[in-house]
Length: 384
Image (cartoon, rainbow, N blue to C red; front, side):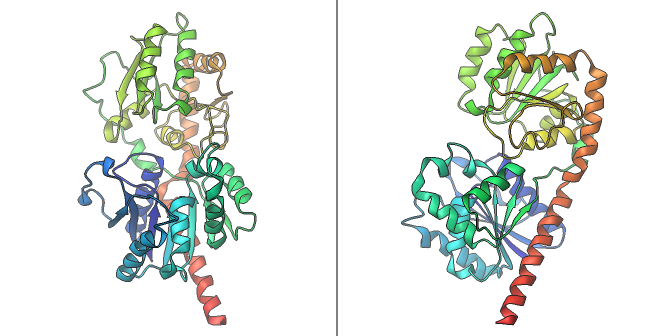
């Protein structure tokens, strides 16, 4: 199959959606198909080395207005379709990508699949903040042959936004299970005080909704009871404020902001943490870092929010605590610190649980959906 993967955002920007699109494209290619990634270019992304990925990537100018420039964005998809002859269009993002894909006349006859990765459905997200675009969301979903829901929460939100949506298929995001089981070498750049199973790990964007301040306050409550270290891996606008809070709480010797991590450094941090902590204060459409931690054999303590509660099984693969509750988070951390055997047992259970999320299996489920939609389209055309 020749698959157009039209996404709101792509590498070299690094985040959950970008990782998902890249992983699926690599799997489709390995399985003998022909994916092409189409995305809006953002100058702030920095240079992109086309040889860094094994699949073709095409860019169009960044989104300015889907009201005034809708046909302009559509021309890029039209041009790609004439070049590659796509069999299916898969839009990653209900809006703008899904809307542009749904309105592009050149590919209107092809099966259209839309995946929401969560940001466009989030509380206080674009759909909530700008009532004027809600009709575009609904139109995109009405024209889609299927919508992929990565969690129970996104499935419910998609149905709320478009009650007459033709089909919702539940396919979660995945993880490269095998790669996370290969022991990584310790990065030379880490502080010497960081030892295996002696630190907590936060991995993600350093923004207010991720609740890192709650984690810092929980760590301060544990002072004198279990003084373990915390690694905050990621980047974002809240880092200066969190560094100030770290100093004010007297945690400067325990908390290390190590910046954005990837590759072997990220792998070592995951494999050797006591546990991953995901203290989000708002919903997570799908906890990518949770399944990565599971694949590395480590448990996860997370807030009991939609998206995270779909993944973390209390007392089996980790723990769930109420959001905005440093005392409850501190209690959950302390239980694992005082019982490392239990933490390891949870990590082993997590590794077994996450096998169902291997990227190859997730890609095959997408391909089955595409094949079904293509076959249905052929039958429809034959009947006409």
